[in-house]
Length: 235
Ligand SMILES: Nc1ncnc2c1ncn2[C@@H]1O[C@H](COP(=O)(O)OP(=O)(O)OP(=O)(O)O)[C@@H](O)[C@H]1O
Image (tube, rainbow, N blue to C red):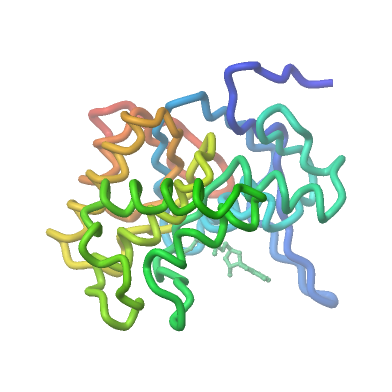
């Protein structure tokens, strides 16, 4: 039985993934250990195909490991039913992707509201929270705009607000600014860091951009199936 740390929002032990389709097997990594502490920010770097998205999916309970375990808020993901895992994900984790995944027919406010209402919070309280968050990401004047009526940076900021609305312990971002121009990417990245400081939400962000990665507390590199912490002068 591995040591499960109390200050970990996410902990992975001996994590391995091999994709298997018919007779084709694609080993990605094996035996990875990772601890994300409360309030900590972690960058994951690695070449294309190194397994960064795979790792993030496993940490977020969106895919099942071939070996090892993931603990979210101290709960072993593999011990939960699909429904329990879904509830834990909705409560304890937020997700931001390269493409915003906002629902096109809903306004910015409704998009941010959805996860809270699904989490069982009353509508007035959910609305209060969603509005406050949209204001803090600079979208207080765009509540009634649908995604198609927002700029790329505004859509990503709305996606960040949606990821944070259930006050998760950790936000997992897969290239959250990868689809934005350099300046907007830096703005959205800095915004995520500011929210991390205000709300002590941990961040695990996959990025190709070393300059952005340097802003985080720790930088890990996934290379040939191993996860290595880079010293600051190597980032
Ligand atoms: N569903 C799948 N079935 C089989 N192989 C897969 C599957 N998904 C990913 N892979 C393979 O696993 C490896 C890791 O993929 P992953 O998407 O995690 O890489 P990545 O580091 O996120 O890459 P990128 O930076 O290009 O997005 C790749 O070689 C990929 O081809």
